[in-house]
Image: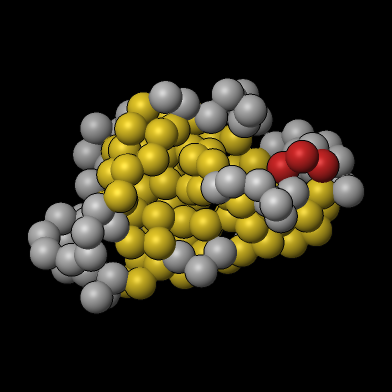
Amino acid sequence: DVQLVESGGGSVQTGGSLTLSCVASGSTTTSNSMMWFRQAPGKKREGVAAAYTRLGSTYYDDSVKGRFTISQDSAKNTVYLQMNTLKPEDTAMYYCAADFPGAGPQRSVAKFGGQPIAFNYYGQGTQVTVS
C-alpha cells in the first residue's frame, strides 16, 4: 500500500520561508497527481496546491498564489511545497495527498483553485506555524 510521509514543517516568522516535502513509498508506478492540503484549528480543510505529474500542470488556491510553489520529482514520487512570504494565516497542519493508479482506496475529490482533482492516499501531516 502507498504511504505518504511529510517533512519540513516548523515555526517561522512572518515573511519567512519553508519548504515541505512529501515522499510516497510502496508504489511501483508514478502518481497521477500529488497535492497539498492544510487545516487550521477550527477551520475546514482546504486544498492549497496540486500538480498533475505527467502534464506538469499546477493549481493553487487564491490565498497562496504567487507565494507558494508546488513541484515534483516524479522519479522519486516526491512532491514539494515551497512557501515564501509566509503569513500568520498560513499557520496550519499541512497534509500531502496523491492519486496513484490501480486498485486502492476509494478516491475523493477536492478543489484546488477551482480545479477538481482526485486523490486516494493521504499523509499524516506536518505542522507549520507562522508568528
